[in-house]
Length: 347
Ligand code: TXA
Ligand code: MG
Image 1 (cartoon, rainbow, N blue to C red):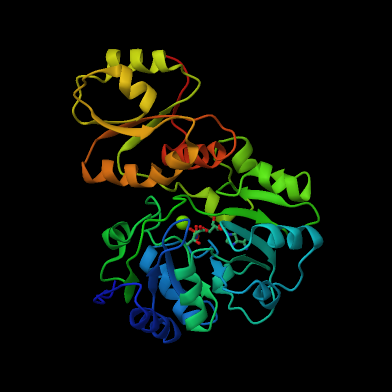
Image 2: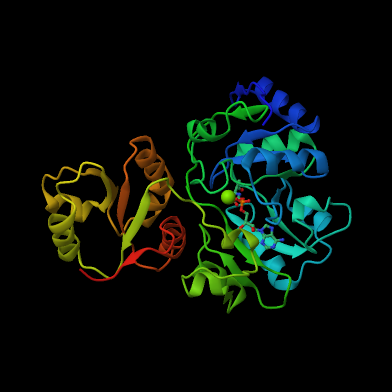
């Protein structure tokens, strides 16, 4: 890996102009979006795109999302937008929604990992829009983490993984949503959910009727050849072995901790406010996540908490699952992958 001194930029207009120029010159710039921080390169420049794969250690068969700043640009990079795709664009873009569409000519092969489709997103965060606008090119951007680590929700997380591997980072506020965008395949007449996120299944179905759900989400076990290549890798994972309690009552979780974990300082516990309140003192490193009903807050904190456990070098993490409804589907999708499908269903 080549050493490049990473420039730390702010959201000032001079710094944004500098970031945009670096993008145009074929360099990598990490930047905030409302979902997670992205690692951006000029999507039209195959050499620049290649640097993304190298910096992240990302498998070449995992395609990138192209970020645009104008709704009109969906039509510049997709060769067809069917009526349901158009309805999703009209209702949710800009925002935390990525559409997979038939790929237009002119985009490099490596940005889509050789596929005939392209993933396109228009972020709603103004700073991200300004950067794309100023760069004057679409920006290919995966999450700005080392492949396999939890996605970064603040600039410090990005630096932890990528400092001196990328040209610059724009340091700004933490990402409000904290989970990657919803990905919907719109290459067929019926849309298909490939990755759950901030735009929930119910929100999609309210606009376009029934949406198919990819097997990798429905079954919650790893699928050998999912439609979205990124979903087959162990992903979002902390360094410690992680397990999730599912279908256990709060009382059963407390009983499990007292019987098996309470005396172990090397264990990290991710607990709802409800459980943490009743548990009392334990030797474990406890992170109080939030109330189980406040799913937006839980989503925003999940990756930050997993990185916190890594910094504290816990050897094992036990985390409380959340109900798989609304945003809970996206939270549990990421948690189950973080835990490599290590699920505890009874005590
Ligand atoms: O919120 C987000 O989407 C963030 C921010 C930076 O915008 N980006 C992000 O990118 O999460 P990444 O690369 O970490 O995840 C992109 C996902 C992967 O699962 C990838 O396989 C899938 O989108 N994807 C990209 N192009 C695709 C395509 N043509 N067909 C199917 N899946 C695709
Ligand atoms: Mg990612």
